[in-house]
Amino acid sequence: MRKWTIADVMTTDVVAVSRGATYRAIVQLLAERRISAAPVVDEARKVVGVVSEADLLYKVEFAGAVAHRRFFPTRRRSPREKGEGTVAWELMSSPAVTAEPKTSLHAAARLMTEKGVKRLPVVTEDGVLTGIISRADLLKVHLRTDEDLRDDITNEVLLRTLWLEPLVVDVKVSNGVVALRGHVDRRTIASLTVQLVASVPGVVAVDDHLTYELDDTDLSGSQWHRSHPFSTTGP
Image (cartoon, rainbow, N blue to C red):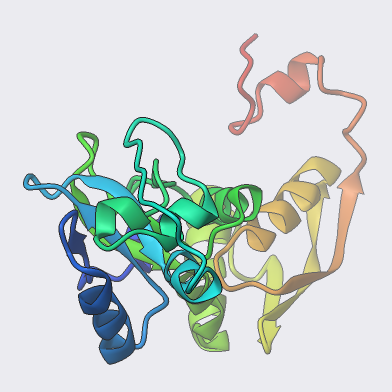
């Protein structure tokens, strides 16, 4: 079953600024493009930081309170120091929290939550900017139609992954909620079906009505279970 990555939903038309971009130019760019932040890149288009509205707001917060300008590129700058900045490298937050195109959607969402950021510059293995992904981009998977979700579940999960005939499990989708009904031979298959369906991008919830013939949860070490095509162990 194909797993979606941030490459499937990221924005490739990335607005970036150079390290020498001026404060006024950055403010104007964010306003014109209706975005709240932009990656800062070097001459090789490698991401060196991110400048956001929050970084720029320090200029307003500390207006009139600036005593002198001191910048230390090797350490994180304080809010007051950012308030004294005039170009991107003095204003940006660094190092930037980034992700690679192959990063899964759930991993990207978890990273945003853990780091408290609203967007991630997407970079190649050597750090070159190739896209950007926002919280709104991650939510795009829930714009998939119910019909699209049902086709994905039937073809990718039931047929290609679990080798189940379509008539064995009935799939109905309404507003992203998937109802599963049917009868399978083993409890492990029923549980795995629900787990895989829940992991399909765009599924909101799974309403599980599957029944099974045999509770095989205690047979994991038996010769019978090891012969199952989805088992990772051998006889």
